[in-house]
Image (cartoon, rainbow, N blue to C red):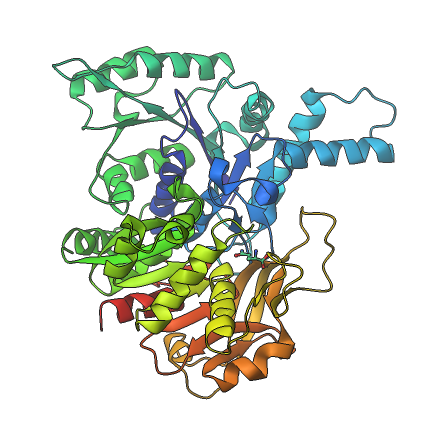
Length: 544
Ligand code: GLN
């Protein structure tokens, strides 16, 4: 069977939920028994997301292979339960680098190297190749690849990709590709009229570039009226049944169901030629999940002490991991965002009030010294008041610093990331990594953690396995010379890397839940399979 493609583009403005639409379409295809993979195209010039500020662009998502990629790949992994590679994220930077390298090698045999055809061909070759990578752990090729085009159609940046995709429909055959365009229907005026003009314009733009959408997914607050649907069909050259209302729903898990109710699976099956089985247990699972979440009423408060608390996207996977765990314990998650520097300013302000009243505390990963002392105060508060605590990466490091300062009495203990002259360097730079280049020099991706003890809370959470594979993104680590002293006072490093040198997990004795992980467990959380360290935090916070 030929590979099928579903291309999801967006118009009018960014942040419409194109990623969620693309992932939800993937869920529908998967529920029809197809093997699904995904590619995200990011038209920026960075070669990857590794050097981009989470403050500006949202979180940097990390893959098993160490790829630092756009957070939408996290959406795909969670929705489709797949494991993607760095090649599944195409950026302008990567494509140009490849073409320029080929030009330097002399591959183009004296020809003038141009956007069309050289860049556009490279994009198409890339998509074709990567779409065949199995991402579901099975052998052989997937059946269908969902491609999300980042940015908004009409942008200068995305033009070469739109052109590549236009050509691609003829390369793979028009029956093997389906174009989905996501747009916005704003509501204006006292009567709340749904306005179609922005969508008319973006479809006109797309068609001007040679792509006619097969499906129009319209984001709106309320369901599209029939009149609006007919009008859109008329002006946008799509079948009336292919105008889909993607209005606000009570929770994210309803989005695939919402699309299903409007016949999206049928439309895709007609266009791409596949059968839909009568039984679709995956959809039942999503339905059950959506129902269960809507039925949860009792709140649970988790204080997240971080630095980019102005843009929640910068902690997207952490939020997802907390949510998945909260569903499991049957509580409704409320995140109390605490700007770490606010904890430093006074001991009696709203930040401290939130911290004190929270059911649990989480210190996520981070870089740079701003807010470090505030995070140390948060770790101290959780440790000394028996408040459940999870420290992820930097969150582990600050808890170790706190413990050394206040339990071992090592005054001025610190990470050399923040104080190179510290008398007690308890967190140190990993020697084999170069300090001069920031791009791609970290300990990245999936590495094994071996449990060091027969019995521990966190090992039980991981189903008593001998080892776990989790994803990393860090440069510093616990100083091996300090481990004995720290452990002698009860902070045990119950998980280490395969050399036994690197500390991966700590757990504090005689505390309801005080756990740190050097890795980022949030990158592998799944809706029905919450990340174990997060589940432990939520269970302890809910006193279960
Ligand atoms: N800045 C710390 C390090 O490089 C922590 C990194 C992180 O939290 N991802 O080790």
